[in-house]
Structure formats: structure tokens, C-alpha cells
Figure 1: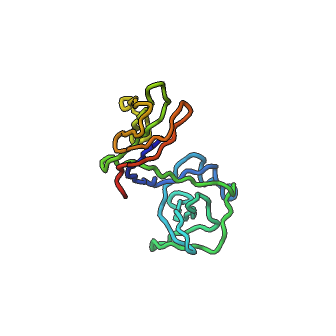
Figure 2: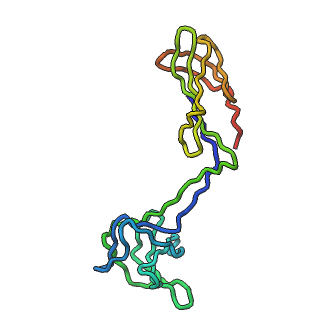
Figure 3: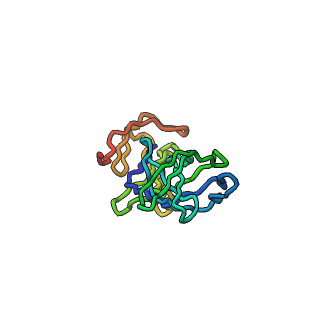
Amino acid sequence: MIRVRDYFLERVSHPSVTPSETVLLGNVKLWEKGSSYSIEGRIEYEGIVYRLVELRPGSGTMAMVRSDGTLHYKWVVRTLTGSLHVPLQHVVYSPSNAQMEHKVEEKVLTAKGYQNYELLYTGITNNAMHFTYREFSPEGLARTAFFQNLTYEANAAFVGFKTFRFRIHSANNEGIAFTVVEDGLPLR
């Protein structure tokens, strides 16, 4: 019937990328499939922001990685003064479809409060409508201690639970027709 997922998320960006394939430049192996490589910085080039990943540790030469993980055909060189320079020559990586995967994790900020629950209609008997309330952890895992079976009169015109109030139009074992009259949820 209803599902409420109301919480604050924090996105945590990992400081590394992982190639989907072993990447070569000519016959020189740059990055091994599945290994992690540090993001050395970012650069804006022709209006697009790229992540920088060093070709070889300590070389100062870095690949430009788009937000979708694809490799740009140019590279960046860190000069002796520390500034970044994009040379004119093109780079040909192999395989050309390799992706540099960048993980961004989402973490629920439980200190700011959260709600994650659902109310399910489970059927009707001669004298009662049946519902199940299930509450979930911030990670979306069912919390067995927070399940509750609810029973209401079969001919009830209105049903209330928590901050919700429903107008029941019809109910049978195949489904329920209802209108949410009040939800009580805070406006954001």
C-alpha cells in the first residue's frame, strides 16, 4: 500500500579508480584490471572536469578520466613548478573501451533521523482486513523485531496507522482500493 523512505544521505567518494580491463599504452601495461589507482587531482579541460590518474607512479604524467569512467585521448603532465599542462599529442589506450570505475558510496545519516517502513495489505476474512507493517534499517534490511500484523474491521470506512489515515473504497483478497486522506509526513 505505502512505502516511506525518508532520510538524509551523504555521498562518500573513494579517492581511487579501478580499471574494468587491463589497460595498455602500446605494449606497456599501465593499469591492471581490478587493482585500485589513486586519483591525483582534477582538471577542467574544454569545459569538462576530469579525474587525473597517474600513468606510472612518480612519472607526473596522468590520464584524463571522464565522469563516466572513459579515458580521454589526451594526457596531462605535471611540470616542475607543479602546474598542469595538456600536450598536443594524442594517446591511444588499449582496449579503447576500458572503463576506470569510480566508487561513490551512499551512507544514511542516522543522527539526522530517518524513516524506512512499509504497510502491506495482506487480505480480508469475513470479519477483518489484514495488514502487515514492516520497518527497515537505514541500509534497507528488514528488522524482524519491527514487524507487526494489523487487523481492522472488514467494513471499516477509514483505517488509521501511525500518521496515516486511509479511506477504504473496496477490499477483497485480490486487492484494496483506498485514498490517503492524511499522511502526516513533514513537508521538505
